[in-house]
Image: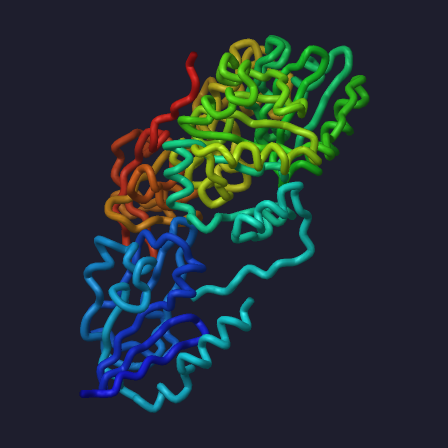
Length: 127
Length: 373
């Protein structure tokens, strides 16, 4: 068994880490703020992402929002299911609605992110 | 994720408490705290309105009463709409124009027994009222902002059936008709019009009765509250212009495809600001036109996106763009050079560096279902 770690950003992305493999999405709070997601633009496999850099775009009925990569690394896969069913982001933001997977290039970056308790407190502080 | 809108000093409508009680997400719009959506969300609210009935708070809009001996003829000096020949109890869509024929605001105006009743956009209402006071009062017109009134819109396939339970005579009101009624003891003014493409009514009532009326309507099983988010997607599907986006002081009614709102007599006589520009455009055509644009696939193109011809040249720009819940896909409106305004013209829309394939289409995107008696 491996130990899974989930970390969060102030921009409301989550990253689930298993060894050097990471899965990234947006939080349930974020999908609630966005409203109905109608389109998601995802990074292609092979693309190198930097921590905090633009990685994906999520479009609701109203507006487009950038999604930033919580960590640096090379994209291994993006969630093809979101292309046909973008509503998965609303229905299951932190599971089936994941955006992309990457291989961590600098695991130390995880230390700069919030754990679940810290993220919950952060969201509560937003009112 | 994007930044939150910061709330500043904002006005509230008489339904502010109700919106918050219903769990609305509120945001400032034209100086008012307005419900963007309720917990159901924009998509469900939109579909519910088309299918059943939706209740909108549009109390932020300006309601104006104009009266005086020659109020119709006087108003025609500011708008190209035909008001002299507007019968009592009927409503018309028109716009204030500037000396260049540009649109200062669009509006609805109806004739009562002894006055005109006008509804203008919230963001423009102060300027509109100042404009009318300056130009119409010298002509003997009294311009009265109805600041103590609220405005509700009940829209959708079941709107007429619902309203008839409270005001039976409302069922007989024609499309773009105006009448008065009594809503459970409250005197109201009704027009059979709206901004969704559906049958429906706008209900002008005393501000202190708005909460009572809204709660009565929401208690009907068909009625759900609808926010400004779905109001925008509904009107865009219906091909209706949003002032400040699809029309403004730099677009004329002819470029905007609103020539239908100018009668034969007004075209011939002119007599409104910018009439010579509008008459010349009617005779000689325009260089650009408002069109519908439908992107292929699911990705929306937003306001400001360039519209590019097959040869790579920029031929226009998107003025409203989003996702149509009833259409089931993205949709946009914008202006293109007239040579490219024909339905079926292939264009591309560069979104974040990638060209989205799209086609110029006829408006509306979703067929209007106004009451035709």
